[in-house]
Length: 125
Length: 134
Image (tube, rainbow over all chains, first blue to last red; front, side, top):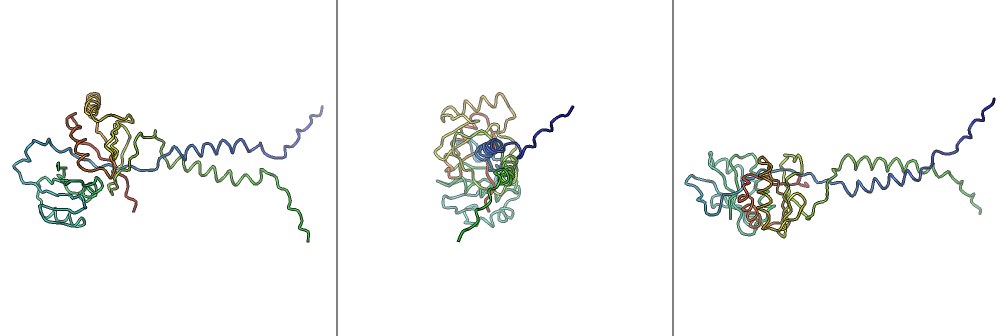
């Protein structure tokens, strides 16, 4: 008995449905995926408004709305803040106090500069 | 002058490089992006150089620039925040709340929200930032 050899298919299986599906998957992943990488900064919530600031000495960093910084009343540049605090502080808590309409970005920039310094916390305005 | 008619090609032949590129794009988007449910509020977190990664997106409190709040994807009125956070902390006492606040938010609004969180029993929170563009 002779079996007919199947006719050679000229092309591959039809590619159009495959491409349709792949395109739809591509569009889905492009729209649904999220590329922002979130990072974390630990923050201690400041104490209640009525609570006393405590008798112990603290180092106060005030952050103004126009991005000026004050370290214990003296104006200071962002770049030299961490260095100055290392000179001034020896173990006291360091309070970062936003003033008026200071933006969160300004505050975070300051907290970021003080990342290696121990005992940093937020203070209420 | 008569130009010779260009040879008709098979359609499948031209499609293969296209499919290759589309497949590569698909693999890139699948691997590089993370799939997450869309958030109810538009928030642009502040930029920072901190490199502590965030493991998961649980217990995330969103705070938009107009002071709108959302906890774990559900928009909350400001008065309901303390109750919702208190319930969450009762169920998971070791929960660390993640606060994703907009970079343009004023510090006064932030402190208001932090007061509500303290009233609900949260002492330390994690402030979310994004990697600085530079």
